[in-house]
Image (cartoon, rainbow, N blue to C red; front, side):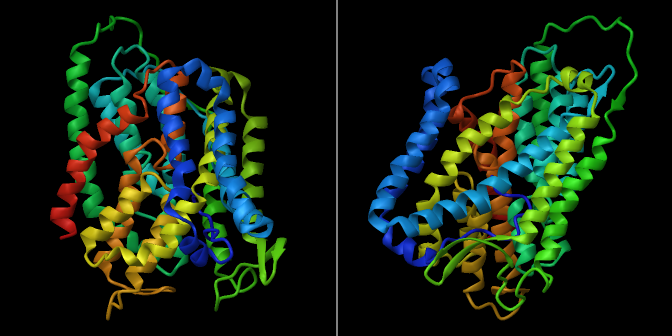
Length: 468
C-alpha cells in the first residue's frame, strides 16, 4: 500500500525513542487485524461483510487504549492525528479520486478474452503503471479485463496476474509509478534514475507474461467456448473527458512533490514543510502541509467533475458502485492505526538488522513491504543504506547511497508489494472489484499461495542475477 505522492511520511514526535520503548508484543493488534482479514471471510463471509467495520475498530482500540494509558494522551493523540490526517486521509483521497475517475471511462465493443487479448491488456496496464501509477493503471484496466472475460469460467488467475504486473511490478520505472519511489525522489534520487530498474523489471515482466499466457491457454482450452458467429461490435471508448481528470490527479501528485522542494512551501535545509498547525505537544507540532492540502483539493475536484460530467449510463454499464472503496476505507482505517508500533520499531531498530549486501536489502525491504506500508519501509531501509558510508553513489538528502543498494531497496519495495492483498493499495481494491463482479478470488492465504509459488522463485532469480 502507500500514499502515491505523499510529500513526506509522518513520523510521530520522538518516533525513534518510541520505537525503542514499544515492546514487540505491541504489534499483536496489527497481526490480529491481518488475521481477521484472512480468516473471517473464510469462516463466515456474510458476517464479515456486515461487521468488518466493527472488527477494524476493535483492533484499533486494542492497540490505542493501552497505548493511551501507558504513554499518555499527548503522545497517543499526536500519533493518531499524524497517522490519520497525514497518511490515511490522503491515502483514501487518492484512491477515491482514481476510483471515481476511472469508473467514468468505458471500453465498449466486442473484446473477447482470449489468451492473446488478455496478455495484451496486461502489457498495456504494465506499461501504463509507471506513468499514471499502479493504482491509476489498475483502476483504468481492471473493468475492461473483467468484461472481456465475463463469459469465461476460469478467471481468478487473470486477476492474480493483473495484481502481480499492473498493480505492482509495472510501477518500477518512475517516481510516479509507486509511492516508495516518489519518496526516494523527494529525498534527492534523480527523477529518471529509477529507469535503471528496467532490467529487473523487464525480466520479471517477460517471465510473468510467459507464465500467464501458458496458464491462460490451458484454462482457455477447458472453457465451454461460446459461439463466435455473432456480429462483432467495433471497439470504442466513452467518457474520454475523464482522461483530463486523471491528468489532474496525476498532475496534483507530481506537482505536490515539486512544491515540497520549493522554499515557499518548506525549509530546504531541514525538509520541514510549512502548513496549518493541528496539534502542539511540547516542542513538537503536527502540521498539515500546504502542499498536501493543495494536492488533496485538486484530487477531490477531479473526482467531483468526473462524477458530474459522466453520464450515469456509463457508470451503470461499468457496474460502478461504492462498495470497493468503502471496504478499502474501512479495513485500512484499522491497518493504519495498528501498524503504528510495527513501523516505529522498524524505524528505531532497522539499522540493527546487520544488512550489508544488496540481497539483504532486497529481501528485508520486500518481506516487510508485503505487510507494512511500503513507503515508510522503503524510507527506513534507504536511510539504513545511506548510513553504510558509501564513498560514491547516488547523492540523496540522507547521504550517499551505493547504486546497487538503492536498486535493491527500490525493487524490494515495489516488487514484493505483490506478495499479499495488502502489500500495495490497488491490490485490495482490484480484488474487491473482481469479487463484486462475481469472480471468486482466492482467500488471503490462498492468494499468498500463488505468490509463494510464482513470485518467490522469481525473486530468488532476481537475487542471483542482480543483487548478489
